[in-house]
Length: 242
Image 1: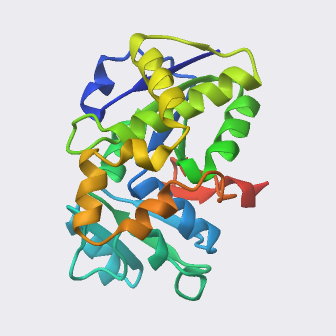
Image 2 (image 1 turned 120 degrees about the vertical axis):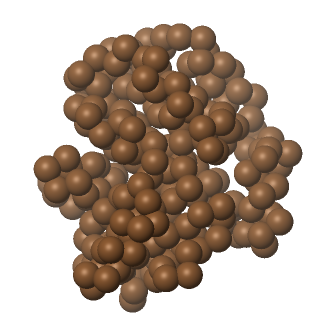
């Protein structure tokens, strides 16, 4: 099997992806981490939507809504994009419509893939184990920031590449994969320090969200495996479906 990485949603159409591919969507800061946190807290499903208007429509129907644009929570929403907001007393057993600046946009771009899962540093081992079990080619799709490449999602890709190369007969393909792996091997000694000069790190710090950064960089603190169910267009926790 092969593993490749697409560093921005804007580049995804240039990849000749085999239909039988597992696409791992990553938005480390913070959508994919927050989705995992919500599922760890017992959320029944996450309904990813591209627009704020769609999230408002779900809210009007009585669902909870998580909505964020440019780091800030939207006024109408029950939650923003912080993993700390999705606590068990608020989300357990609930379905949540969810839209963010970058993460949910990336998911919609890849929704024709055979399998789509959500990856973060917090569930890296769970994603690795699933990809090995699935026995398909793997494509990491980085959410980036407004279609631009970012460092944190690229580093997650490198971490997943390293994990898969150690686990089974995966081979990496493409220069982007080589770049991501090399960056990860340099960064993993002190991930927070390595990211401290990156754009989104700085953006979160300026909004007083350093605790969110620390949460997002915890390795393997989540047991959730959010998998996109195409018929319902919902993210469900695969580990609860077994």
